[in-house]
Image: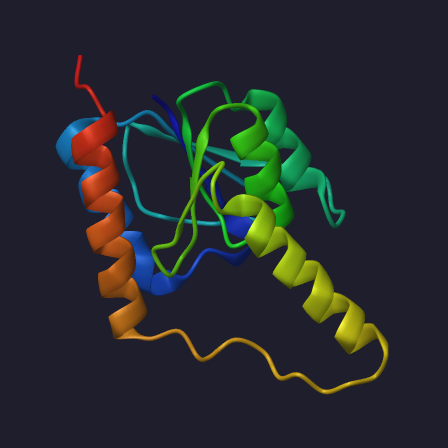
Length: 151
């Protein structure tokens, strides 16, 4: 299993959590973004910068991701594409996307986008905080315990 990080919107609070797991388990990790992102220094992390463009990082992640890999992303359409490849996706708040729930998340996202496009002010998500980072850490560690096999 490889770990892919959608770096374009990666939350700073998660960097030490993810880096600690990468180092502890020697997880091959690829951070993909359209600008320089630094999760931390590790021989297990490869950084890839893609061309500017709304979905360039997403396309690269989908191209490189294989069955069983894990992608950390807050991008629901990307998560849907990952799930379709029989890989796994988790968001920054600890939601583990799956075949059972991704279409519901995608439908809700599309509905909210349609509402915003009509000029309705819906507000954004709640501010990201320590509680969210803790929920992510718990879900991330549970996933690794269940799915990651060390060499």
